[in-house]
Length: 325
Length: 301
Image (cartoon, rainbow over all chains, first blue to last red; front, side):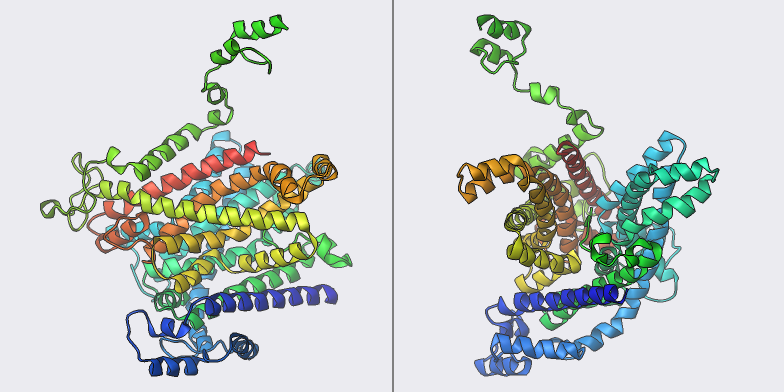
C-alpha cells in the first residue's frame, strides 16, 4: 500500500515538474526578446530601460541559468513576480483561489448531481421515449458554448425576470448562475461516461445474480451497479476539475466576478508571462492533487487494487481515457 | 466469361470486377450515397445539409445574403428580427444575419485550421510513438500526459499570451491544445494495427520503413482518428468562439461568431436577438459536426 501511494505521488511530482519545464521553455525561449513583451507592444523604451527590465526579471542571464533559478524558487513555492503589478505570483494566485474554488466546488456538486441523475434515469427509464429524450441531453450539453449559456441565463434570470443578481461576488445568489453555466458541460460529460459505464455494468453476471436473489431495483442500483459503474468515471475527475477551473475564465468574465479567471484574462491580455506560467503550474497541480486523491480513494472503493502488488496494472491508467467529448 | 459480364449489366448492377464498359455506365455516381447506411442514421441528412450551408457561407457569403455586414443603417438600429432583417440589427444598425453569414469565414477557417493542426501533428506523433515504441514512445507519451494535465483552455490562453491576438493566433493556440488527445488515440490504434499479419508481411517482404508506415499502418489506423478529427472540429469551434468572446480572436469591426455574441452583451436587456441568434448558429454547427463524428466513429468500428 505504501509503495502504491509513493509511486503515485512520485508520478504526480514528475507531471508537475514537466509542466513547469515545458511551460518555461515555451514561454521564455520562444519570444525573441522577453523584455519587449514586458514593456508592451506600444511603448518606445530606450535600450538602457530595456536593459534595466532584463536585469530586474533576470532575462540577462543564460536561459538555462534562468531555468534553474526558477526551478529552485518553485521548490520554495515562489513563482516569481507579476510583470504588471510587481506582486508575488504565488500571493496573487493564493488571494484569488478561494473565490474560484468555491464556484468550482458548487458547480462540481451540481454537475455530479445532474449528470448522475440523467445517467441513472436513462438506464432505468421504462418508456423508450423517456430514455431517448434523456440520452439526447448530454450531446446537446457539450455542444453549447458556455459563454453563450451564461449570457442567456443572465438575460432570462437577471434581466427578464430579475430573480438573481447579474454580476458580482456577493452572497449565494451571485453563485447560482455562474455555477450552472460551468456545470452544464461537466454534467454532460459525466452523464455520458456514467450512462455508458452503467449500461455495461447492468449486463454483468453479478447483477443478474443479485436480481435472482430477490434484490429490488433500488438495492441493485445502489449496492451493486452504481458502486462498480462509478469507478471508471472517478478516474476522469482530475481532468473534469481542471476543465472546471479553466471554465471559470468564461463564467467570471460573463458575470464580472473576482477570481482566478479574471486573473487569467488580465495576465493574457497584459502578456504577463510569470503569472501565465504560474496559472499553468497551478492547473497541473490541481490535476495532480485530484488524481492523487482519487488514487488514495480507489483501493477503498475497489479492494482489488490495494492488494495487488503491481498495483499500476490493476487499475485503469491515469491517462485520460476520453478527453472532452 | 461473356455471360458473366452481360448478366450484371442487364440487371443494372455492377458486381463483377471485369465487367465491360456498358455495365459501368449503368452505375450512377450517387449509388454509394443512395445505399449508404450512415445517411439513414437519424439527423445525419440534416447535419450534412447544415454543414453544406455553413460551408457555402464561408466560400460565397454573397449567395446567402445581399446585405453588407459592415454597412450601418442608423435609422434601423436595434430593430428586432423581421422579414427585412432576418436576425434583426445591432447597435449601429448593421444587419445581424449578414454579419453571421460573413462571420462564418473567420470562425470556420480558424476552427478548421486548428483541427488540421491538432490532427496532423497528433497523428504523426501517435504514429511515431506507437510504431517505434521504447524511448520514442516514452518521450512522446510523457509529453502528451503533461499537455493533458493542463486544461486545454489554459494551454490555449497561455499560447495567446505568447503569440498575441488575432484569428490565426487563436487557431494555432486551439490546434496545439488538441494535439495531445489525437496523439493518444492514434498511438492506441497503431499499437493494435502493428501486431497484425499484413504489417509483419510488409516488413518481411523488404518494404522500407516509411513505406510500411505510410502505406500499411497509417491507412488502417486512420479511421478512428478521422472520427476524432470531426469531433475535434466541434471542440475547436467552441474553443475558438470562446477565445473570441474573451476578445483574443478576430478584431472588430470584422464579424466573427464569438465576438458577435460578445458584442450583444451590452444590450442583453434590450436586444435579445444579438446574443441568442448567433449563439444558436454556433450550437447548430457544433451539433452537426458532432453528429457526423459519431456516425464516422461507429462506421470505423
